[in-house]
Amino acid sequence: MVGTTSRTGPTTRRGGLGLLCALVTLTAMPALGGGEADTPEAVCPVGFEALGEFKLTAYVLAREEQFAPEPVVVDPCGLRGEFSEAFLFGSGVRMQGSGRARDGSLIHYAGKGCFEVLDCPRTASGRCATVGRTVAVDRVVVPLGSTLWVEGLGHRVAEDVGGGIRGNHLDVWYGDELTMTQAYRQTRHGRKVCMASR
Image (tube, rainbow, N blue to C red; front, side, top):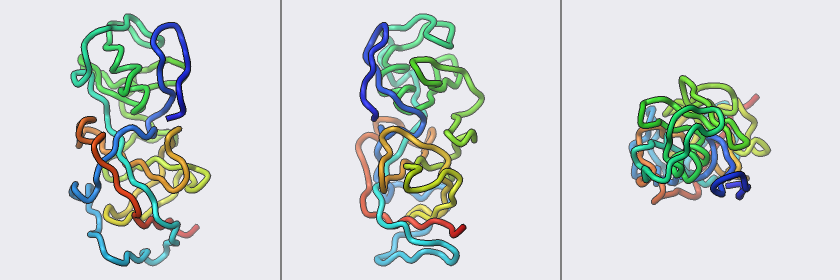
């Protein structure tokens, strides 16, 4: 998390879809999208170079029904209607990057305290986040668009970033596969990550 900024109303956290906010023990979950099993000494696939050991966390699609219904925000920047303040500005859309409102619309954090309705959870690369493919990275360590192999998960693509993703840290997109409550409780350290040679 980048920290807090003040605006008219509540204090909020900055961030996009890839912000660290939900943590999951990835070995407790089946490898989504067909991942390889853990091995004591994981070896990079042919055509990949080792990047080192990484911390793995997860981010999910925030769901408004999982947040306190009050207080509400009426017609926030970029949206029309009433929304749970915690859903938009707490640990929901602003931190996760995207969320599903009670009316079914998909809300994306557009930055500077504003939101937009989109057809999918949009990543920093402009692609729709996809379970089994999308990870958020620190682009100083892993360039956007890179194909990765992650121990215990298999292949993923660096499609997103986030203020809380620094250094050897990947945030794995789980969409609707996990609730935020499930995701907050868990994390994984020391996972080998390899990047496709360019």
